[in-house]
Image 1 (tube, rainbow, N blue to C red):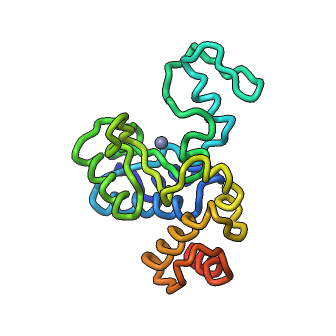
Image 2: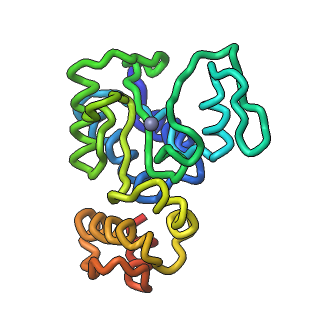
Length: 208
Ligand SMILES: [Zn+2]
């Protein structure tokens, strides 16, 4: 039996975690839907990752890795990332990873083929940047929506991104990218001014 779209959406939503940015989440689910319409079954495997989870991941395969006074070294597992805590867009809820699932929905397929690339293209059409396009280290499952912000800007503006508090300089670009998304996708007709005002807030709540 062919896997149901609802199943893929449910699993994807769960895997993205509660700290995922609302625009990223909706765009990811839209990507799963659009791919499904083309007969491509895709699932989101990861989204938001806390700083502690990142430390755990970074500690895999690394001897004596200490973060914030705690030992996260785990040599029983292979090295999986070069991103230290705070140096992954996943830590800010702005990134997702995906994989293709078998027609029955039971197996993950990690082959980077035409289907895989088609999903990346759908993601890009929704505003994501794809890790497969990176020149130095290619991260094929990875998609992110960063609004051009650096990690240090994000660190300074983490609260803004997570809780949508009023705009600060560091978050202006993120707010602008949210406003653009709301205008493009929901025809919200709000000013792209980088200020998280009542109109943007209303559009965001209505849009989702
Ligand atoms: Zn990723």
